Amino acid sequence: MNLKTKYLYQEFWNFFFLALLIFILLFMTRPLLWLMDLIINHFFTFTTVSKFFLYSILEASPDIIVLSFFTAIIGTIARMNMDREYWIFLISGISGRHILKFFIIFGLIFSFLEFWLCFFVAPSSSYKNRLLVKQARLDEPMKMFRAKSLIKEFPGISIYVNDIRNKNLHGIYISYRQGADSICTITAEKGTIQLNANGYLSLLLKNGSIDTYSIKKSRLILKTLFETYSFLLPYRIVSNLTPQPKPKEMNLFLLLNNALKHSDSTLLLIIFKKTFFVLLPIFYLFIGFYTGIKIRISGYLHILGIGLLLGLLSYFVILAGEGIVHKTGNNYLFLMVPLVFFLLALILRKRSLNVI
Image (cartoon, rainbow, N blue to C red):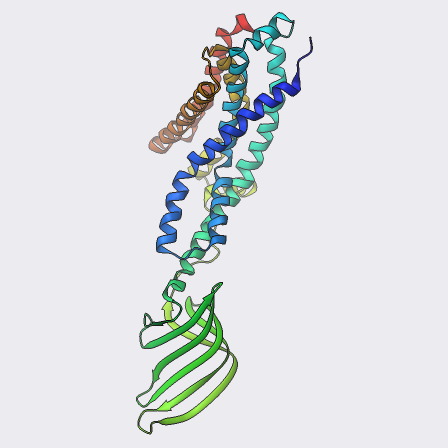
């Protein structure tokens, strides 16, 4: 009897995509809370919200993918065990080791995927998300501008905007006092908010005029037409638009370069953790396979729930390892985490020798 690989593929991917959806929902809870704060306190559009969610998912993708893989392995083997299919394979001459070898291909594929996600995709997404939030704070003054309302948030200046579309101001009227005897009014068809090199906001106005009136003489003394005019606002934002990546935002090459130049314990911990996550699918493959053989429950949802629970428990072991490192300051203590997973795989294998 030959092993039906198409059948195993289908079982694996069914569990994988269900687990993937659930873990995305779990890992997106905290970004959702951040997003609510940003929407309330800063300027966020539909495009920036979409980018924020995409970058947040990609930032958490190493955790989400590897946990979904672990759940899928447990679910596939436990489901075969529940319907006695695993035992039918054994009776037909297909050993458990043969089935395990089939899943080793999956483990290697997911290890390469984790390498790409851990060292390149997740750091880049984390950095882009920080830039997105920073840009939202820069765009915050847009909240000061409301269509068909008189804006007096800027000292000594009154601004009226007829309409606002896609961050563009239309029908702009500006009034301010100049000196002791003059009042200036500016009208423009449209304009945009810009940030100059010194961090001050300015309105880039197009197609308008500047009228200067004398208060004493009660008449117009100067009228200037313009196609483009930059009007500086008394509002300054101090911010670095292109900040340096933080350690967790560095890709593999930046991490290695900085680790060689500086003896930073944070960089070592990040390298240790990412390397462990690259190898984690292999650990999860053996742990999930031997665990699935031992599960004696019925029901598809029960099996899925057990897989999800075991995945989260294993994730808490990783978090506990990070906590110990941060508390003691000894990065090498993180090596206890892969050691725990290795010993767990050995123990489960020993207990399952009679059924593989």
